[in-house]
Amino acid sequence: MKSTDGRKPTDGDAFGPHRPSETRRDALRMLLAPIIVGGLGAFGAAAARAVAQDGTPSPEPAEPTRTDPAFIDPEASPYPTFIADPAVKGTVRCVGSSAVALLLNAIRGDFRDAQPAIELEVVSSGSGSAPKALAAGESDLAPMSRAMRDSEIAAIEKARGAPVRFVDLALDAIAICVNRQNPVERMTLRDLDRVFGRERKRGGGPAVIWGDVGMRAAGFSSRSIVLFGMGPGTGSNGIVRETILLGGEFRTSVKEEPVSSSVVQGVATEPGAIGYCSAYFTSGRARPARVRELEIESEPGGAFVAPTDEAIRSGRYPLARALRIYFVDDPKRPAPAVRLLLRFLLSEDGQTLIGELGQRTLAPEAAHRFFDALK
Image 1 (cartoon, rainbow, N blue to C red):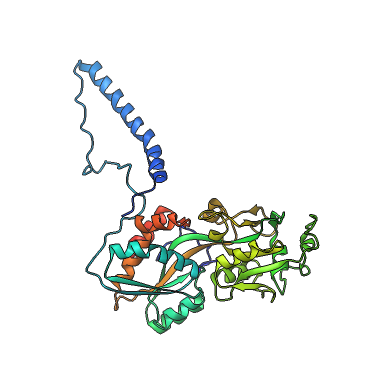
Image 2: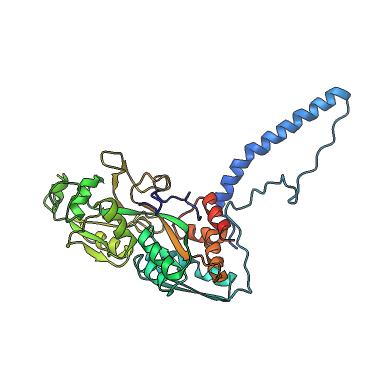
């Protein structure tokens, strides 16, 4: 997926109280251990030299305290710290992506505990509805699972008279999944276009049975390909259409579902099915996987790549995407409740909750960049 400036969105893009997990703390301890040991070794050598010179051992230095600039706290979180402001009141209205709505609803209770006077309203109606609601002033935030188009941004800025900004909340990808009985492991972009596309802009004839894409396994070569996907207003639909179908139309036989979990359910109950949806629902990170993810080409003729954390973060997986929230940055109409919610989502509190949900969190440095831009 391309961002509005033409780059693939990764957790390095930036806007122009839960404790850290044990895994994160252990990683920090492992990182700091050689530094601490090395530092002690250096001090010991210096002390030995002092004794050798005049026979009087040097006094041992006091251990650094938390007020010492050199102090390193192994318990500290790499993510920003959220500071609540109980005096702020209001309602934050969010209209858009169902994938981002999942994250917003997951943090709702903890955010209410931190900011009891701020109400959060979430309408899950697809990424396509987000720009329209923001332009009409019907929402404060536009959650999206695809990049907002230049034309959509222009329409909002014309209607609202202020620039549009965004922050990323997490990383996700669109997975191509099949029934667990299906032995297929990987597919080319061309074959996926033949399966899902009506126009087949990558070439080749339509693929309507599994034998059409090279399947020779008994019981599958003549089995019909049953298609599941997301509706035209969703970010998933837009990304697959742009990346795999090269802007072409989907076949009319695709069974369009309102949410990713429905796609998984459909594919899981039909042996000949293939579908696309958020990788959060197919990877088994948050629940046992009911379907199998396929490896797909990174580019025509390129290596086959599965939607792993590394491939998504690096951008090698072609259907990687950022889950983000757009808003109107109007200095004449400051919205402290909106900024507090966004800062909470980017903080240790928010990113911990998002990670516990099974979603891929931002890299800490990216979270800090977005967080600092909201001051």
